[in-house]
Image: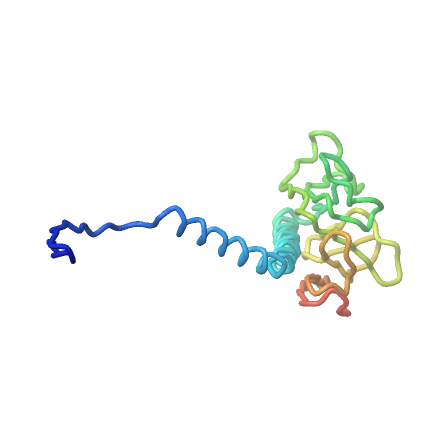
Length: 197
């Protein structure tokens, strides 16, 4: 486009597209400020997602173990993994934060013996999530037996409570969940870490 200038000069003005370096720097600065404001609110969301993901993994494992026990006429065990491979949240029989596995317990002794008792499924440690089992009236063991009817048993107890919470937090944390295992093999998820089964 040709324009007539004040002093009688002709100039060619070109239209340009894109951003200048200053505009880009201003945009980056604004995005950095917005990200720093929004980041803390994502922390709770991520923790809740991790706890829920761990709950869904264990729930899926229990459904799998139940179907395998019915198919194999019992003799299936879900066992917690101990500390190792960088995971240190599995102290004691009640702490399942380092993952778990499902195996066929052919000799019915509750332990996996060598290669004769095959592993059906393994689950790795969930990220920064603590998992704690409890059972009314008994001390929980590190294994859940599943009988031929798909009923769960842990040290004689058929009803268990499993709590999922972000690492280094309490059951009252907003990101905590509860999984209830009831007599008869019923499994129920509760959206609270302090809920009663």
